[in-house]
Image (cartoon, rainbow, N blue to C red; front, side, top):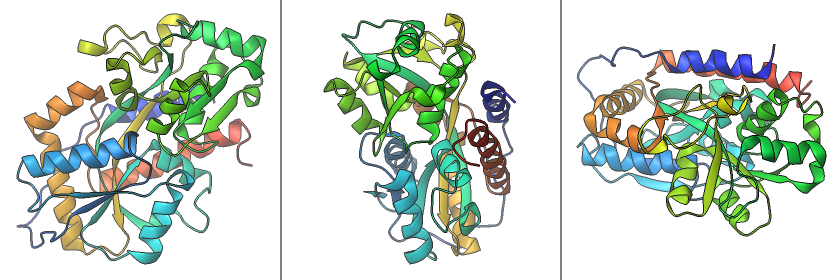
Length: 330
């Protein structure tokens, strides 16, 4: 199966919506709500924790300020191990997750851990992938960048906020394969602990391109530091993102949507689990969150509780297929 077909299959799922969580009166409230962002400040996981935490508080859905803790390392593996091994029954804790989390789980990159060791709460939207360059780069289109890679793979280093073989890495490989670059392993990818750090290296001139998500890139686009040369969406986005070209309109049939959501400790109580599913779901339904999604280019993805767990299970299976196809795993 072509990489783009696998990703498009996942994207179809991202267009589904599910009914709001319904359950009994809540018997739990967190005393000290905390969200772990498994990367340094500035990336997508950091955005997920901080924006959702602030919005939950603004909407009166949590009783206290959400503490955000950045715990970078191992493409999310350090945070995953911390939750599984040390905080496995913490009812106050939620952890930002995404397609990058599913990718690392699919590839066995969290040593000794698997997706069944945590509880999957809910999604809060899907973030389209982007490929970007510095504002002063000579490359103004995706095809110009890919031509440079095709002609001299050593001349371009691409930075991303996931580990080698992670979701950011896979996005640029998907685009390269769709463009006809046969040896995608020749592409130089450099991994950093979060999209913010990866963009910083781009601005420093240490790398020539960035692969990440729209929410990670937006602030740097607004400041004029970088230019997005391709959004990995089926068609152009609306509003302030309408000027950003898609890969597809440039003849590169590459689509990549990064889901964003949360998991919780595996031994979290059912009362606490139901509480977090309900509160995240209520936030998703709010007008305030719709505005956040619009402002940050998030696509609809409303999955809660068992539906979200099933979606993550299917995501891990799909990414396992991708990873085997390009030889990242056997």
